[in-house]
Length: 207
Image (cartoon, rainbow, N blue to C red; front, side):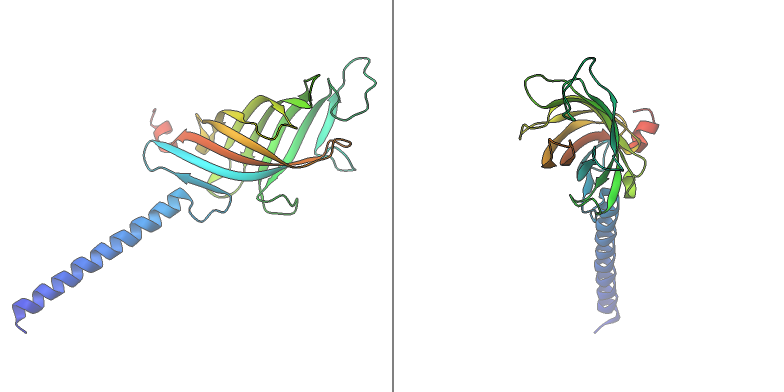
């Protein structure tokens, strides 16, 4: 083998090594920025716009000694003792977890208020925020204000804004009732959430 040929082989090896290193680095960077390893949430998009999809469970407990939702107002003259009677207004601070089991991993809190606003169905007017505490979403939040017919199987709730990673957010949440006890008002609801938002760095730059 001539010295010239050996040098060419070394160059080819160096090029192959460089390409392999760059591809591996880019894949690792993409996963780090797109949260590939998360089991409950994922953010994609490396340009100005991003999309986050996440799934979590909301635990709303009215009964028992340690409720997470408490009655703060009731319709004048109402004798209806059902927890979700028309005119009842609650304030809540509920856990958001990765699974329906209340002891599963905590990823945030759902806080706000809801009131029974429907005479013809079990429905709630809800004003709430989901504030997340896990991973790259720590400190970020989304806001939802809507009428929620909680016994309807297929329904969507609009996301009207957000903070942190979700600043200027738009999107929708699809709730799926996992458990609902109308005698106590206790509920566990799964939320499949799709959020469209701008990359945080672009917001800071005035976009």
